[in-house]
Length: 351
Image (cartoon, rainbow, N blue to C red; front, top):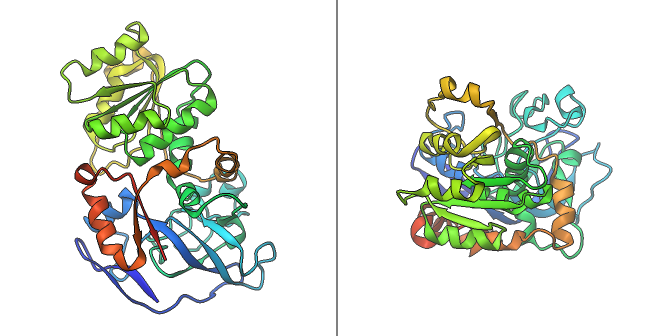
């Protein structure tokens, strides 16, 4: 089969690799019908994730058709259409029993690390993929949900919802600001309304992304390059600050922005993946009773979000802005890496 293979920092190739096979009785082999590219994949290619070894097949998002199951798999069968979760889940360890799948203690990849696809084991940017703990790491697709919609449930929708909205403790009537209107920020915007947010402010440098954010539920937009960006946000809150500030970029400046606009007693929910230390002004934050949350997605809300997509309550298909075939994978990476020029949100790649 062919797959996107990591060749070290700055190197990738669409090349021939051996087909995957069943290793453990709980495994399934999935023919990948649709996949996509995540910002994390770009971090890997920059050399920011040293745990990824040369020769690793990249990718942790996908939708496909089961072709083979291990001996202990009884609830899935060949021919089933499934979403591949970005997080493994053995389903029976202490962490999985509490829904903390991001720290699954199963030994696939590494014990205590839930994100293994395209990281510690071969991933989904391939024609076929081996899925460990298949009964807990795959989700059956109902009729009426397209691959294009479903692939957004592998990672970005549960990430934006769980780490932004749930960890941010959004409640009815809240004013929520989302700093960074990329795919994950837009996922937080799209799901903040599920918990009753009354006002949702999208903040970004890119005017195109700000305009797109309105289609996902943003009630107001603020261009962070404006000299009065902070005043624009505070004017929507009678000067008090937002109830929840969601950081969805992963750089020190945007985290700092969130701490500047959150009201006393509010929450800063960090979703972005930071590659550098962030200065935390506890000397100011403690007296404002600010809560700070962060984390890696558990993907334990995927079944619920899938129901909402099936009922057309979430606009999952709107994330897809560019489409490619598997033999155009390198072009897809180029388009996604130049998102500021190409206006790409998520690139959808199909077999």
